[in-house]
Image (tube, rainbow, N blue to C red; front, side, top):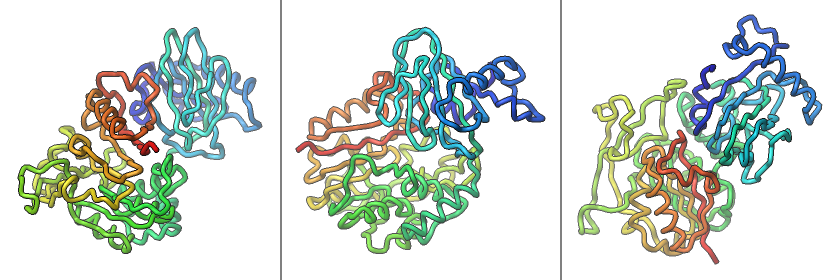
Length: 397
């Protein structure tokens, strides 16, 4: 069986997947899958022409999936003359619906067309033997393309300062771009927003553009703080990490902790500016995570005692594992109406603590939505995917 690509492995929970290239392209160097399955390659693109739902020309590629279940994701490529994908399910199976932005679609022998690059999608659980074919045309997203998008968004949202050869680019594109990852379910108008894990200010700029009344931000990394101050001068910025509990009973005493800088991204060696974390949450997989060059001492503030105040109505936590202790510590969210939490399942993969936090938030009066809540992933003992998840919590009225 041809090897699954690294990008697809990150969102593949179970099963196998490989990609065929349209023989009509007459590539000089044929992919391995085409060499192993030349007749299959011919047949799947002939099938596309018979069942396609639009007037688009034939796709360049087709993903062939066998008993594959995918975690919520958007596709990693960008459209090259085509932004739509077409999928169809084949085989004798029960269940296995495609979920696109929380809408369930029965694709068993029923082709369905959607935008896989902008619409989050995943697979429901199933029994039996399930094949799916996904036709698409994509090109590798180039750093230059990402930078062009980031430059355009930065101009639109008044982001004046960022590092072009770093994950600042991804932060701008994810928060301010077409997907606007923090947009769902939250109405930020007239709210006083607490931004924990403020990075270079993309979230702060976003909520202010949506009509937020004010932003109070916490960011422990001094370099990120410089960029935040340039990008969001009207916000209040405190250079500190927020934590769930402090070891001292003295409420006025300042504390500090070791803070670890994230290594460069493996896929493109970009400088990683947004995965830094307190030492106790640093993944063991990081190369030399505790060397002196990667380590800082940062001020810490207790979230309950010093950060959460009565005037705050929206809280965003993107703090790389520190949310675990904060969710344990908070017994009263005061006047908070919306919580947006990047929950770091890749830093603590046991699912029971995650379910416990959801139950606690529910008991404290919040309705919660997240991508995989209606899939079998939620019931697994351990998180098997390679991405974290966003929790959108709304106070019940």
